[in-house]
Image (cartoon, rainbow, N blue to C red; front, side, top):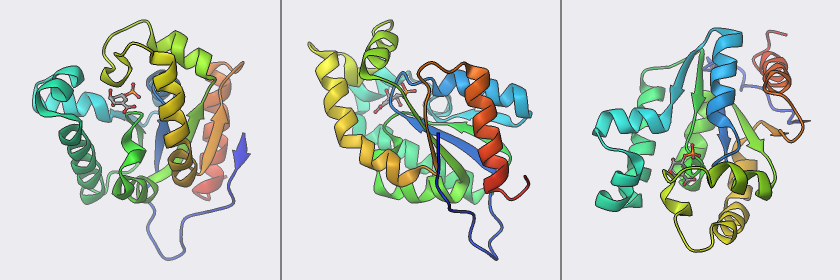
Length: 189
Ligand code: S3P
């Protein structure tokens, strides 16, 4: 685990959310549930909110409306969270949310951003189980993973306050590490 030395800017009322970013299959949803249980903060999963708002599955949004529409919905949702001054929530995000420059700024305004990482092989293993990720429904999903990871890694790095390689760690260990770092970040350690 690596600590970035930033803390919220003085004189600003920081929003105390813990936001999980990272590639598909890195365990954001499971960890979101674990943090929700350990900390008692409400859990928001941006993909689930979009599915609920539109009444469509993510594969249907991609195939019927296009990826750009999905990206706009992600941005709209982040803007709403800021507008509502959402605080003390766990926010689990879709793997491509950092690709939109505006989102990277908003995510950091929303709170403490954690980048979950694991190996390409683990990602392949976990994502090959289901067909609900349109960007990996192709002839060579391993190559798609490699290409997208290379493209997105700088964006995750730019956005996150903390990065964690989860390989070999239990959900409880990752959760404890995040909570300790988040308390330090929010100045309540
Ligand atoms: C996407 C990741 C998915 C979902 C959509 C697009 C991406 O979420 O938002 O399929 O671009 O990486 P998960 O990271 O939860 O799989």
